[in-house]
Image 1 (cartoon, rainbow over the protein chains, first blue to last red):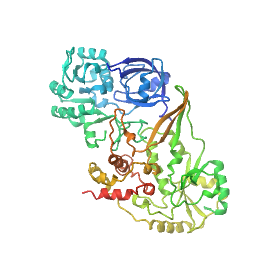
Image 2: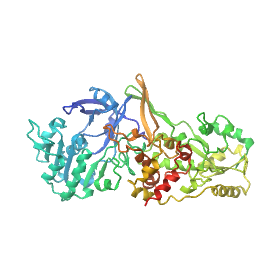
Image 3: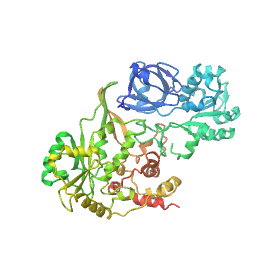
Image 4: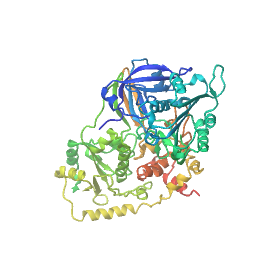
Length: 279
Length: 338
């Protein structure tokens, strides 16, 4: 019987400071054992438990795409005991990963569809995974148009800046970066994410929307998408809740009868609308 | 088969030689709990039921998942040998079948729980003295129920010390065959006499109807009734610790120098820290929401995900509550929702 509580040994191969506040870092992890690299079979939208013995575990969305071979990326905000220790850990540090956990975005349903990606703030991480996966030359032709809106409060909060520049220049994706309020030195778009989505007005015909962001962004984005004609089944969201086991046993991340770790973290708005708003 | 009182010591010795034997033992904290047998004296029906349920045998209150040195795993504890639990009440044995769903289901088996369950024989003890707080017959159980049991043990008569042992599963039959040297064949009329005692015990409990409570809870998620029934709750979590179906746990690291253990411990949905996000946001920030979680997990969510009400009517939460909250009264109050 495979023991789901045992982390796989990994090594921090690289650390990137993502934001001006320096409290979000992206960790590139490489597997210490060949067999783990071979069996860590994931799709964008899934998460894993990062482990530092003595400090515990944290559930973090996978920011890399399975098309990026040989390593995993996790963007982690410094918050508590474990993530603070992780932020203090240099390249070469040995740690652990348990996963992949949860369900990914509905990739079978996404095939052949036009895709709208809406994201705000720090929740962009698994959508970085999704965009990278979609734009991979081997995958791009399997999908229709790709439109993305990514908003933060101010430019210093933008993650993955080199990739953003590439996507903004790419013909394979209509990528819009926006900030909440005007800021000196910013020549890009200004406006709250739901407003910008409405202005861009993507066609809901044959389209599915992937939406990740803070609750306030979700709250105002869903009515915009519904107005644009997106069916509730075609609005796909990802939830977060406090987790320990990550496999539907420890009992804390449920929303109604559904465990975010096991049945989610990806849910459609049609599913969520029927569940109590305990998230 | 019959286990005579005078053969008890030899029987216990025989069982304990082949397996770890868990029986209700007096606990310094009061009442009885399941512990490894140290003498024959403890094998007798416990009244009231053990203070902690039989879940503690399979899902200990504190358990080491792994030990580590620096960043490497040093050891992972395994299950050593067979287990026999003697004297679990039918309500507890039945509850373990639902825990099998939790720990064995969801596509990922929990090896610690599942391996202990596979290695175990449960001898359930028929219940002749249901307490005022017991309500197994209201949730589909019975004082002599055999669900989850491998062998059903019952007293041969009021006050009798001899026990009738009847196999329920193949595992139970081979257990009895293995220890047949300490057992006597039962008289032909023993099962019918047992049925009469079962009926008498069941008749001592009032049967309540909770079938309407799920739709009422689902529709009344925001009802002020939750406030009303939770007002006196202290949030101590005692109800969850004594419950045979509460399975929530925490995982923490305990280090000393560069070595340590990753342990899991019982946790409870009644604590605000249980669901507190790192951001400070808490989806269940009020005790109303936490009590709703406890009752709805058992009576609404589990019927959806595991096709069973996760409550065996053992009554421990009723007996343990320091402010006398009674789950039967809370459910009744919710059923009365307009």
